[in-house]
Image (cartoon, rainbow, N blue to C red):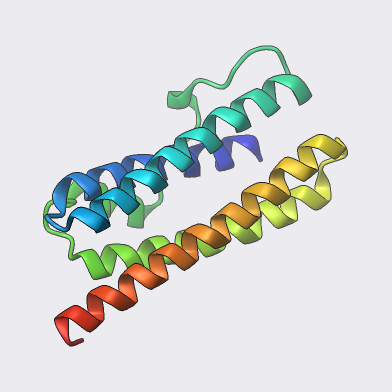
Length: 144
């Protein structure tokens, strides 16, 4: 459970950072950097939660697992991905993450941990909304 959440936060931060560096749109880049920083904070908080609830030894990032096929494909061709495609993909990821954290919060017995996971779920919903607004604005500008 923790490994999946950690991997998702880790890969999301990398993807947002990569696309922020790629775009020439200053405001879009700032939003993506904000999302990357948020995902990094989530990763660190999940690592701490894992340490407190499960074990004293941290999970090593390389032991977490492999990215999904879609994530691998994105990371391999990040220089050629259209921003609107990226935004749609990450909107789906954020929506899935929200559902995951809501489900995870119901399964965890630690009250503080459950509250943190509910907070993460709310943050993922905020991320989704930010990405949707950015995608709508981009499409409007391009006349799509």
